[in-house]
Length: 328
Image 1 (cartoon, rainbow, N blue to C red):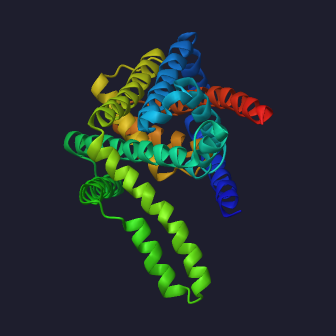
Image 2: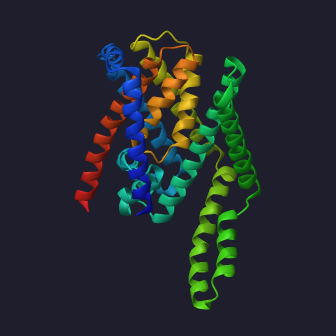
Image 3: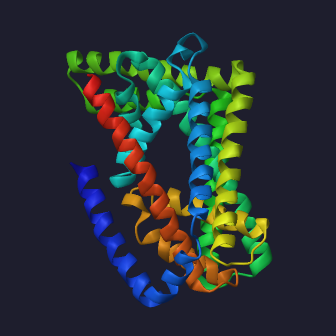
Protein backbone atom coordinates (compact mmCIF):
# COMPACT_ATOMS: atom_id res chain seq x y z
CA UNK A 1 0.00 0.00 0.00
CA UNK A 2 2.79 2.42 0.93
CA UNK A 3 4.72 1.64 -2.27
CA UNK A 4 1.56 2.27 -4.31
CA UNK A 5 1.01 5.63 -2.60
CA UNK A 6 4.67 6.55 -3.16
CA UNK A 7 4.33 5.67 -6.85
CA UNK A 8 1.16 7.77 -7.22
CA UNK A 9 2.65 10.83 -5.50
CA UNK A 10 5.89 10.48 -7.49
CA UNK A 11 3.94 10.13 -10.74
CA UNK A 12 1.90 13.29 -10.05
CA UNK A 13 5.02 15.32 -9.25
CA UNK A 14 6.83 13.84 -12.26
CA UNK A 15 3.97 14.66 -14.64
CA UNK A 16 3.89 18.24 -13.35
CA UNK A 17 7.63 18.53 -13.97
CA UNK A 18 7.24 16.98 -17.42
CA UNK A 19 4.57 19.53 -18.46
CA UNK A 20 6.68 22.37 -17.05
CA UNK A 21 9.82 21.32 -18.94
CA UNK A 22 7.96 20.78 -22.22
CA UNK A 23 6.31 24.21 -21.99
CA UNK A 24 9.60 25.90 -21.07
CA UNK A 25 11.54 24.25 -23.89
CA UNK A 26 8.85 24.52 -26.58
CA UNK A 27 7.02 21.77 -28.44
CA UNK A 28 8.22 22.93 -31.86
CA UNK A 29 11.87 22.79 -30.90
CA UNK A 30 11.53 19.34 -29.29
CA UNK A 31 9.52 18.06 -32.29
CA UNK A 32 12.23 19.23 -34.68
CA UNK A 33 14.84 17.21 -32.76
CA UNK A 34 12.64 14.10 -32.66
CA UNK A 35 11.94 14.24 -36.42
CA UNK A 36 15.67 14.04 -37.09
CA UNK A 37 15.79 10.63 -35.41
CA UNK A 38 13.89 8.73 -38.13
CA UNK A 39 14.71 5.05 -38.61
CA UNK A 40 17.74 5.57 -36.38
CA UNK A 41 15.38 4.64 -33.55
CA UNK A 42 15.83 0.99 -34.60
CA UNK A 43 19.53 1.30 -33.81
CA UNK A 44 18.66 2.71 -30.37
CA UNK A 45 16.35 -0.26 -29.77
CA UNK A 46 19.16 -2.66 -30.74
CA UNK A 47 21.57 -1.01 -28.30
CA UNK A 48 18.98 -1.08 -25.50
CA UNK A 49 18.27 -4.76 -26.25
CA UNK A 50 21.98 -5.48 -25.75
CA UNK A 51 21.75 -3.82 -22.32
CA UNK A 52 18.95 -6.18 -21.24
CA UNK A 53 20.95 -9.12 -22.56
CA UNK A 54 24.04 -8.19 -20.51
CA UNK A 55 22.05 -7.90 -17.28
CA UNK A 56 20.36 -11.25 -17.98
CA UNK A 57 23.72 -12.95 -18.58
CA UNK A 58 25.00 -11.36 -15.37
CA UNK A 59 22.01 -12.82 -13.50
CA UNK A 60 22.68 -16.27 -15.01
CA UNK A 61 26.29 -16.23 -13.73
CA UNK A 62 25.05 -15.30 -10.24
CA UNK A 63 22.90 -18.44 -10.09
CA UNK A 64 24.53 -21.54 -8.51
CA UNK A 65 26.11 -23.65 -11.32
CA UNK A 66 23.86 -26.63 -10.57
CA UNK A 67 20.74 -24.50 -11.20
CA UNK A 68 21.73 -22.92 -14.53
CA UNK A 69 19.61 -25.39 -16.44
CA UNK A 70 16.93 -22.69 -16.26
CA UNK A 71 18.55 -21.08 -19.31
CA UNK A 72 19.43 -17.57 -20.42
CA UNK A 73 16.22 -16.72 -22.31
CA UNK A 74 13.99 -17.63 -19.38
CA UNK A 75 15.88 -15.11 -17.26
CA UNK A 76 15.72 -12.51 -20.04
CA UNK A 77 11.93 -12.83 -20.22
CA UNK A 78 11.62 -12.67 -16.42
CA UNK A 79 13.82 -9.54 -16.33
CA UNK A 80 11.74 -7.76 -18.97
CA UNK A 81 8.48 -8.75 -17.24
CA UNK A 82 9.67 -7.55 -13.83
CA UNK A 83 11.15 -4.30 -15.07
CA UNK A 84 8.03 -3.51 -17.12
CA UNK A 85 5.96 -3.31 -13.94
CA UNK A 86 8.83 -1.74 -11.98
CA UNK A 87 9.19 1.07 -14.53
CA UNK A 88 5.47 1.79 -14.30
CA UNK A 89 5.30 1.73 -10.50
CA UNK A 90 7.82 1.91 -7.66
CA UNK A 91 10.97 0.67 -9.38
CA UNK A 92 12.99 -2.22 -7.87
CA UNK A 93 10.67 -2.43 -4.88
CA UNK A 94 8.21 -4.07 -7.28
CA UNK A 95 10.48 -5.25 -10.11
CA UNK A 96 12.84 -7.52 -8.16
CA UNK A 97 10.19 -9.61 -6.33
CA UNK A 98 8.23 -9.87 -9.58
CA UNK A 99 11.26 -11.24 -11.47
CA UNK A 100 11.55 -14.00 -8.86
CA UNK A 101 7.80 -14.61 -8.99
CA UNK A 102 7.71 -14.94 -12.79
CA UNK A 103 10.27 -17.77 -12.64
CA UNK A 104 7.89 -19.79 -10.46
CA UNK A 105 9.06 -23.33 -9.73
CA UNK A 106 11.66 -23.25 -12.52
CA UNK A 107 14.17 -22.25 -9.86
CA UNK A 108 14.21 -22.75 -6.10
CA UNK A 109 13.25 -19.75 -3.99
CA UNK A 110 16.70 -19.67 -2.36
CA UNK A 111 18.44 -19.62 -5.77
CA UNK A 112 16.10 -16.90 -7.06
CA UNK A 113 16.59 -14.60 -4.09
CA UNK A 114 20.35 -15.15 -3.70
CA UNK A 115 21.18 -14.72 -7.40
CA UNK A 116 19.05 -11.58 -7.76
CA UNK A 117 20.63 -10.11 -4.62
CA UNK A 118 24.19 -10.70 -5.84
CA UNK A 119 23.36 -9.35 -9.32
CA UNK A 120 21.83 -6.20 -7.85
CA UNK A 121 24.80 -5.65 -5.55
CA UNK A 122 27.22 -5.78 -8.48
CA UNK A 123 24.96 -3.53 -10.55
CA UNK A 124 24.63 -0.98 -7.74
CA UNK A 125 28.36 -0.86 -7.04
CA UNK A 126 29.21 -0.61 -10.76
CA UNK A 127 26.66 2.22 -11.11
CA UNK A 128 28.26 3.98 -8.16
CA UNK A 129 31.67 3.70 -9.82
CA UNK A 130 30.15 5.16 -13.00
CA UNK A 131 28.60 8.06 -11.06
CA UNK A 132 31.86 8.66 -9.17
CA UNK A 133 33.89 8.84 -12.40
CA UNK A 134 31.37 11.20 -13.99
CA UNK A 135 31.17 13.46 -10.92
CA UNK A 136 34.96 13.79 -10.75
CA UNK A 137 35.15 14.57 -14.48
CA UNK A 138 32.35 17.17 -14.27
CA UNK A 139 33.90 18.90 -11.26
CA UNK A 140 37.34 18.93 -12.87
CA UNK A 141 36.28 19.99 -16.38
CA UNK A 142 33.31 22.34 -16.06
CA UNK A 143 33.93 24.41 -12.94
CA UNK A 144 30.43 23.88 -11.58
CA UNK A 145 29.17 26.50 -9.16
CA UNK A 146 26.45 26.97 -6.57
CA UNK A 147 23.83 24.31 -5.86
CA UNK A 148 24.92 22.12 -8.80
CA UNK A 149 28.44 21.85 -7.38
CA UNK A 150 27.05 21.02 -3.93
CA UNK A 151 24.81 18.34 -5.47
CA UNK A 152 27.72 16.76 -7.35
CA UNK A 153 29.94 16.77 -4.24
CA UNK A 154 27.12 15.20 -2.21
CA UNK A 155 26.63 12.53 -4.90
CA UNK A 156 30.35 11.83 -4.96
CA UNK A 157 30.50 11.45 -1.17
CA UNK A 158 27.46 9.15 -1.18
CA UNK A 159 28.78 6.78 -3.86
CA UNK A 160 32.25 6.61 -2.27
CA UNK A 161 30.55 5.66 1.01
CA UNK A 162 28.50 2.94 -0.72
CA UNK A 163 31.53 1.48 -2.52
CA UNK A 164 33.85 1.51 0.52
CA UNK A 165 31.22 0.10 2.91
CA UNK A 166 30.28 -2.66 0.43
CA UNK A 167 33.90 -3.73 0.03
CA UNK A 168 34.47 -3.77 3.81
CA UNK A 169 31.26 -5.64 4.66
CA UNK A 170 31.77 -8.31 1.97
CA UNK A 171 35.53 -8.58 2.53
CA UNK A 172 35.16 -9.06 6.29
CA UNK A 173 31.99 -11.18 5.97
CA UNK A 174 30.03 -9.04 8.40
CA UNK A 175 26.48 -10.38 8.73
CA UNK A 176 24.92 -7.00 9.39
CA UNK A 177 21.41 -7.89 8.20
CA UNK A 178 20.86 -11.03 10.24
CA UNK A 179 22.79 -9.65 13.21
CA UNK A 180 20.70 -6.49 13.33
CA UNK A 181 17.47 -8.47 12.88
CA UNK A 182 18.27 -10.71 15.85
CA UNK A 183 19.36 -7.76 18.01
CA UNK A 184 16.18 -5.78 17.32
CA UNK A 185 13.98 -8.85 17.82
CA UNK A 186 15.47 -9.54 21.24
CA UNK A 187 15.09 -5.89 22.24
CA UNK A 188 11.51 -5.43 21.03
CA UNK A 189 9.88 -8.86 21.39
CA UNK A 190 9.52 -10.50 24.77
CA UNK A 191 7.24 -13.39 23.81
CA UNK A 192 9.50 -16.46 23.60
CA UNK A 193 7.35 -18.24 20.99
CA UNK A 194 7.27 -15.22 18.66
CA UNK A 195 10.98 -14.64 19.14
CA UNK A 196 11.75 -18.26 18.21
CA UNK A 197 9.67 -17.98 15.02
CA UNK A 198 11.44 -14.78 13.98
CA UNK A 199 14.89 -16.21 14.72
CA UNK A 200 14.09 -19.29 12.62
CA UNK A 201 13.36 -16.94 9.69
CA UNK A 202 16.53 -14.92 10.30
CA UNK A 203 18.47 -18.13 9.61
CA UNK A 204 17.45 -17.77 5.94
CA UNK A 205 18.81 -14.21 5.90
CA UNK A 206 22.10 -15.46 7.35
CA UNK A 207 22.25 -18.13 4.61
CA UNK A 208 21.70 -15.42 1.98
CA UNK A 209 24.56 -13.40 3.45
CA UNK A 210 26.81 -16.48 3.33
CA UNK A 211 25.90 -17.01 -0.33
CA UNK A 212 26.83 -13.41 -1.13
CA UNK A 213 30.17 -13.66 0.68
CA UNK A 214 31.00 -17.00 -0.95
CA UNK A 215 30.15 -15.72 -4.43
CA UNK A 216 32.74 -12.95 -4.23
CA UNK A 217 35.33 -15.06 -2.38
CA UNK A 218 35.04 -18.48 -4.03
CA UNK A 219 33.77 -17.93 -7.60
CA UNK A 220 36.33 -15.67 -9.28
CA UNK A 221 35.41 -16.74 -12.84
CA UNK A 222 31.72 -15.93 -12.32
CA UNK A 223 32.62 -12.69 -10.55
CA UNK A 224 34.83 -11.64 -13.48
CA UNK A 225 32.09 -12.39 -16.01
CA UNK A 226 29.48 -10.51 -13.96
CA UNK A 227 31.77 -7.45 -13.76
CA UNK A 228 32.35 -7.71 -17.53
CA UNK A 229 28.57 -7.80 -18.09
CA UNK A 230 28.04 -4.74 -15.89
CA UNK A 231 30.79 -2.84 -17.69
CA UNK A 232 29.21 -3.76 -21.03
CA UNK A 233 25.84 -2.54 -19.76
CA UNK A 234 27.25 0.88 -18.86
CA UNK A 235 29.30 1.10 -22.07
CA UNK A 236 26.14 0.39 -24.08
CA UNK A 237 24.41 3.18 -22.14
CA UNK A 238 27.14 5.62 -23.17
CA UNK A 239 26.88 4.39 -26.76
CA UNK A 240 23.11 4.85 -26.75
CA UNK A 241 23.44 8.49 -25.69
CA UNK A 242 26.24 9.12 -28.20
CA UNK A 243 24.23 7.63 -31.08
CA UNK A 244 20.98 9.34 -30.06
CA UNK A 245 22.55 12.76 -29.72
CA UNK A 246 24.33 12.38 -33.06
CA UNK A 247 21.09 11.33 -34.76
CA UNK A 248 19.21 14.39 -33.47
CA UNK A 249 21.96 16.75 -34.61
CA UNK A 250 24.21 17.30 -31.58
CA UNK A 251 27.96 17.38 -32.09
CA UNK A 252 29.44 15.62 -29.07
CA UNK A 253 32.38 13.40 -28.19
CA UNK A 254 32.18 9.92 -26.67
CA UNK A 255 33.67 11.40 -23.46
CA UNK A 256 30.76 13.86 -23.24
CA UNK A 257 28.32 10.98 -23.77
CA UNK A 258 30.05 9.23 -20.85
CA UNK A 259 29.45 12.27 -18.63
CA UNK A 260 25.78 12.33 -19.64
CA UNK A 261 25.31 8.63 -18.90
CA UNK A 262 27.01 8.93 -15.50
CA UNK A 263 24.61 11.71 -14.52
CA UNK A 264 21.72 9.62 -15.89
CA UNK A 265 22.81 6.77 -13.59
CA UNK A 266 22.83 9.20 -10.66
CA UNK A 267 19.31 10.39 -11.53
CA UNK A 268 18.12 6.79 -11.82
CA UNK A 269 19.52 5.96 -8.38
CA UNK A 270 18.23 9.13 -6.71
CA UNK A 271 14.73 9.00 -8.25
CA UNK A 272 14.33 5.26 -8.66
CA UNK A 273 10.76 5.32 -7.31
CA UNK A 274 9.46 7.87 -9.84
CA UNK A 275 7.47 5.86 -12.44
CA UNK A 276 9.29 5.89 -15.80
CA UNK A 277 11.41 8.79 -14.48
CA UNK A 278 8.72 11.11 -15.89
CA UNK A 279 9.66 14.77 -15.55
CA UNK A 280 12.84 14.07 -13.57
CA UNK A 281 14.72 12.74 -16.62
CA UNK A 282 13.55 15.62 -18.85
CA UNK A 283 14.47 18.34 -16.35
CA UNK A 284 17.77 16.78 -15.28
CA UNK A 285 18.93 16.02 -18.82
CA UNK A 286 17.94 19.48 -20.06
CA UNK A 287 19.96 21.19 -17.32
CA UNK A 288 22.93 18.88 -17.93
CA UNK A 289 22.83 19.61 -21.67
CA UNK A 290 23.04 23.33 -20.89
CA UNK A 291 26.02 22.79 -18.57
CA UNK A 292 27.77 20.84 -21.34
CA UNK A 293 27.18 23.65 -23.84
CA UNK A 294 24.18 22.29 -25.79
CA UNK A 295 20.76 23.79 -26.31
CA UNK A 296 18.37 22.52 -23.64
CA UNK A 297 16.07 21.04 -26.30
CA UNK A 298 18.69 18.39 -27.06
CA UNK A 299 18.49 17.15 -23.46
CA UNK A 300 14.69 17.11 -23.43
CA UNK A 301 14.58 15.29 -26.78
CA UNK A 302 17.10 12.72 -25.50
CA UNK A 303 14.95 12.07 -22.40
CA UNK A 304 11.76 11.72 -24.47
CA UNK A 305 13.45 9.29 -26.87
CA UNK A 306 14.50 7.28 -23.81
CA UNK A 307 10.84 7.26 -22.74
CA UNK A 308 9.70 5.94 -26.12
CA UNK A 309 12.37 3.24 -25.99
CA UNK A 310 11.41 2.39 -22.41
CA UNK A 311 7.72 2.02 -23.28
CA UNK A 312 8.58 -0.25 -26.20
CA UNK A 313 10.33 -2.64 -23.79
CA UNK A 314 7.57 -2.23 -21.21
CA UNK A 315 5.16 -3.48 -23.89
CA UNK A 316 7.39 -6.50 -24.59
CA UNK A 317 7.72 -7.18 -20.85
CA UNK A 318 3.96 -7.05 -20.32
CA UNK A 319 3.50 -9.64 -23.09
CA UNK A 320 6.00 -11.94 -21.32
CA UNK A 321 4.27 -11.33 -17.99
CA UNK A 322 0.87 -12.22 -19.46
CA UNK A 323 2.34 -15.38 -21.01
CA UNK A 324 3.90 -16.41 -17.67
CA UNK A 325 0.59 -15.91 -15.83
CA UNK A 326 -1.27 -17.89 -18.49
CA UNK A 327 1.00 -20.89 -17.94
CA UNK A 328 0.20 -21.01 -14.22
